[in-house]
Image 1: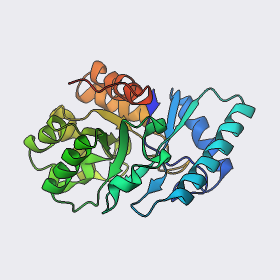
Image 2 (image 1 turned 120 degrees about the horizontal axis):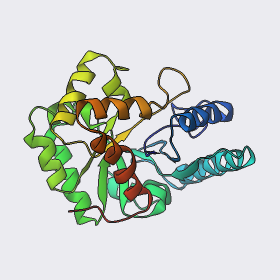
Image 3 (image 1 turned 90 degrees about the vertical axis):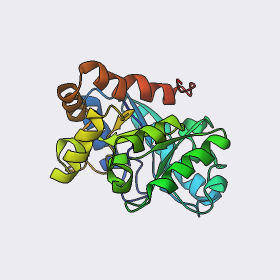
Length: 240
């Protein structure tokens, strides 16, 4: 499986507190059957060359440790960008797009963001020849009120992700309810872990995949955890 949203990079944000935790997190991911992990530390519209240098340095250290321990996992680098006024400038930095490929980027919004703003960001991104991958779409309550909303986002070129933890109950029953609804609406493109530690908010992609298989189908679960995220990893065009 491929996990394209997590905070396993050591000591750069509110995720892993250090190298030991990062390695424990990756060991847990491997046990779940995850073979590819894109590290996505938090970034914002004030991100600059210093953030790029910080992320690259931490990433190179982690890659070296993984190699030294011969852990069977491949690592890539991107970032989770909080929407802000200077989004286009932020996207010019190497860490902004998945594996530096310049085609896809991960973006998050505040929970109270109106649907129309999210839709307009997707439209602007497509004008910039980029595909926005929307982090944990289930959290944006004004964009999940009716099926037509995620459908419009996807029709405009947005890619919707769902946190596996939301689906399996890590964040309470309300998140399970809206996550289940999105699965039933067939509006989720990718399932991700959004792992932050090696404990209660760790890699849980296996459990999430099993939940999708029960709610929908094994084919849908495979598409969300292998086929679609692999397309982003390989920087291939999105279908449609």
